[in-house]
Image (cartoon, rainbow, N blue to C red; front, side):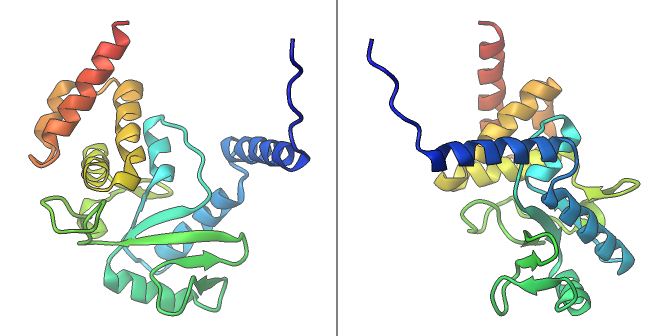
Length: 209
């Protein structure tokens, strides 16, 4: 029997680094979670409407996914207000004039999506990122988008951008974990309804195996 080839030391080191990082994330001790807490405190202190989106938001619905950055939905006015408040005081722009920022304390990138932008390929479509002032749901510690809105955005993204297929996989996982009903389609924009039904049916077929 041939022996297994030698795993390079660097590859093994990356493996254990990832394991440790995932462990810290699920214990709530990762740098990205500290950066999230800091970001939310700053936004709340300035009364800037926002919604946390991306992988972090999936945890609200029982889909545990690690991530290395924080995604936040703001209006253009909210972003300008936030930059005026924090730049040079714990945050820097990724590059001059960029939407995105970097938390220099925790070395975590803050990716900003603006209300009115279109998901996926960025081209005009019936689904766009909503104004967090009216769309977000406020909890005791954070503001998030409703599940149907999050699904709608992820479907529109994965449908129109080949590099965003993970968004469709996220919807599949939400269907599985939350046991989402077929009737949720009635809450979605007509643009994404066929894709939701396709993914929903695929999960039913999978569960019958």
